[in-house]
Length: 188
Image (cartoon, rainbow, N blue to C red):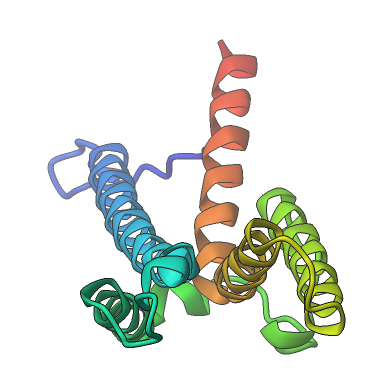
């Protein structure tokens, strides 16, 4: 990282200290964005894991049990909190996100844009295939059907999160820090 020195009237320089403070502030902002992103990812994960509770949702008579109500509440609560958190974090970090390069395609159409997104998109594909097989064949094991549904939901949520602007900002700032560290090591 280059430091620019500006001389004050008394001849002293102050550019380096200002840039160090600015760099620390940017690192704090990135950490705040990462923390918010992990919270959003966690709430979507709660929503995606709710199909695991489906076998416990009804009793032998077919009536909805407490686990059934909990499944619905957890699904919608995780989904709503995740969406609201993403929107709020996007609004709060609009300036930082604007610094990254614009993409030609919308997030919905972008696949395999980074390492974690590759894993999420493959999981999404596997989940969709398993779910389609389970819909066409009603005699499939329930565990496989639930696993496919969980993979599909988690893959959908992760696709939008890991291919989106917030994660691209986190990914680019992470790469920038790694490149900055490598540059500093070369200078020494």
